[in-house]
Image (spheres, rainbow, N blue to C red):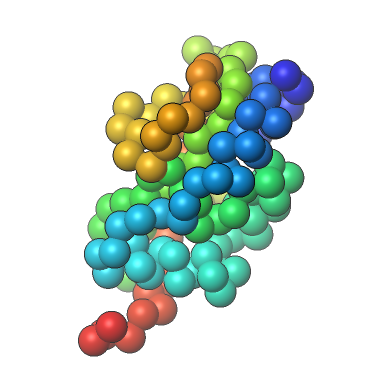
Length: 141
């Protein structure tokens, strides 16, 4: 396992196990409008650059989130929570705090609802983002 810092979190990541699982996984599978909007933003490369950068480093396609939920509409878009499962450990889980940036919020945690991560290797944790995203789908799509 390789030690890394993901914002304020010190973690150990099994990059091979993580990459191998994502190579055979499918894109997020929900076809509700909120999730289709998220997937379209992934396809258009319209997630925050910080999200794309870390996912690229971990060999994870953005559309292969293991959890996606539109939390609520906001004046300037829609607040989404989305996660990616990572093989490894959070080393400073008791002391690290989520990081708030101008593009959103990120933390490492243990998502109790692994809808999109069937068969993921253990141990693992989730890289979770809270980001306000634009609505890009046409109304009647």
